[in-house]
Length: 86
Image (cartoon, rainbow, N blue to C red; front, side):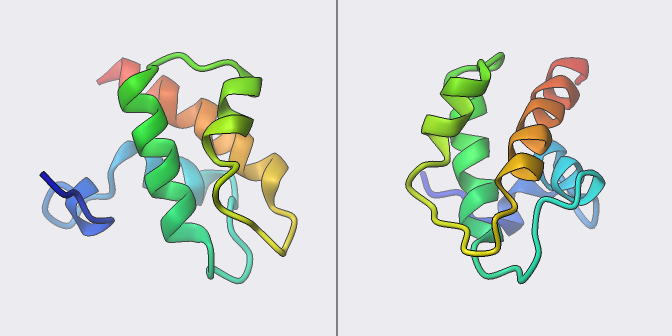
């Protein structure tokens, strides 16, 4: 099964990871954002409550030249909360 960025949405409603990225301004140019969102989604499917080090490792395959990593890490933690809340 392959899930795309659009597959994380429920109709027109953003998924938890997408919401968290928007809440925490976890993007600047937007070039790496789809890959970062999918990396965080994959991480949270495997580990619903990752540590900051696990988040860093989970997104390490996607380079962000804008330096939005602190916001991406915060967004990942928030996304984990949103997913746990259901």
